[in-house]
Amino acid sequence: MSQDDGLVGLLGHVVDPHAGMPPWLAPLAGRLLAKRSAMPHALLISGAAGTTLERLAEVLAAGLLCDKPDSEGHACGGCTACLLLAAGNHPDLLWLRPDEGDESTGRNASTQIRIEGVRRLIATLTLRPHHGLTRVSVIDPAEAMNPAAANALLKVLEEPQPGNVLLLISGRPTRLLPTLRSRCIEQRVVPGRQAWPEAGVQRAFGHDASPDEELMALLRDPSPDAAARELWPVQRGLLEVLAGGARLQVLAASRAARLTLPATLEVLSRWIHDLARVKAGAEPRFLPKRSASLAKVALEADLQGVVHMSRRLAEWQRHAQHPLHGPLTVADILLEYRAEVFPQNRTRQPPAALPGLQPSRAAPGSAAASVHSATKA
Image (cartoon, rainbow, N blue to C red; front, side, top):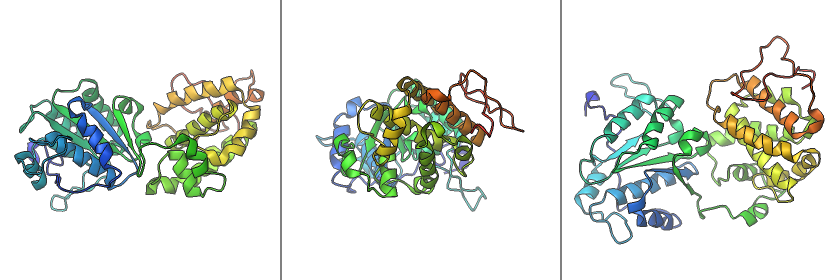
C-alpha cells in the first residue's frame, strides 16, 4: 500500500472470527450484537486498559461486518467477509492507532493520534461501504487523540453518516474531551462484572484497603494501567491535603510535582461527590477509605457551597486539556474550593496575586480570577 492512497494506518487489522473471549465478556458481546440493527453510531468501550477491550471491539466488528451472522449476531467465520477479516484485508474495517513509525522512511513512532489520521478516517466515512452495508471504524485508544484530532472528530459524531459505526476504545475515558464523550453511548467493561455493586463498595474497599485498592475504588476500575499507578502517589497526596478542610494548604498542594490539571480535577471531582454524599448522610462512593476524613470535613462544609463547587468542576473539565499554567491553575481551583465550601474562608476583599507572578488564566466565568498570596495559602 502506498503512502498516497490516504489510508495508511487505517487498514490491515487482522480479526479472527473463531478466536475466543473471556467467558464473563461473552454475555455482554451477545447483548450488543443482538441489537445490531439499533447499534449506536458511536459506541465508547471503556474499562481497564488491555487486550480485553480490543477483543470486544473485534467481536463487535466481526458480527457487524459478517455476511451471514448467526441468530445471536456473532460472525459465522466462513463467509467472504469473515475470510477478509481473518486475512486483515476487509475494506470496511478501519482501525486507527498512534503511528508506530517506519525505520525505512525515517518516520518516528508516536504516542498520539494526530489530526492527520483522523482526517484520513473522516474522508473514508463519506464513501459508501465497499463490501456490505456497514463500515466499522475503531479508534484505539481514543484518549491518544490530541485535542486537535478529538475536535476534528466531533463533527462526525454530530452528523453521523449512514452505514457507519464508530467504536472508541478507552482505558482512561476521563481523559477524553467531555464534548466528545457526551456524544457517544458508553459501555463500561469491568472484568467479572458489568457494574460496581454499590452496596459492596464499602466491603470491597474498606478502611484496611491497600493503596492499590483505594486507587481501584477511585477510578472504579479493578485494573488501573501503569500511568494511573505512577500518578497515584501524587493524587493521594492531594487527598491528604483536602482532608485539612478549611485549613487546606493551597500553595503546597499546587506545587506538588506532576500534579497536572486533569489529575487534580479527577481527584477533586470525586472528593466533592463523596463530600456531598457524606453531608447528606450516605456512604462515600469513590473514597470509602477516607470516610473518617470526609465526615470531619463535612462538619464544617457548607452544602450549598459543595453543590456549587460540583458545578464549577464540571465547567473546569471542559478546559482540562488546555495548555494552562499548571501550578497556577491548580492553585486557582483549590482557592475557589476553599472559599466556596467553607464559609469562614469567604472575604469581601479581592484576592491578591502571588508575589512576582501574574494571576492565572482561569477558565471563562471562573469565580477565582487570581491567586491568593503565599502567606494566605
